[in-house]
Length: 177
Image (cartoon, rainbow, N blue to C red; front, side, top):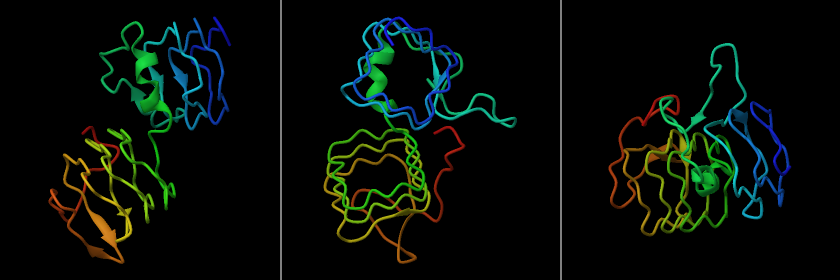
């Protein structure tokens, strides 16, 4: 994939572990659920913006990154930001018993996500959408960093995570946070 022009390419669910994108152009690519890893090489990639979802008639520019349509990735910034693009939409994902310690999930959509028994020690979820997010007492929350008000349900009972305030509703993923 070196030097390939993948502008506006639909890379949905494409498995790209270890792929070398050196010098490729990814501006406007649709990268919904693409399978990139830390072994995927983005050195020298030219990319002004990407879309995290395929377009629809209702939303021709779905989940654009960077979020602000007036902004583009600076030269080299896409390579630095790729870890945030590995999978930012975890809607309905089952993260039960996963170890997400020290993960950076800022801006991620975690609606209807199961996180039962998940290690969330030191996780940053600033600006994340956590509507109807399910955890249990086995979920490790030590030093969880949260800057938004969220609703967490455990068996339909709201619970309080130390250092946060639990409200009756949470931001929707469709809103800018």
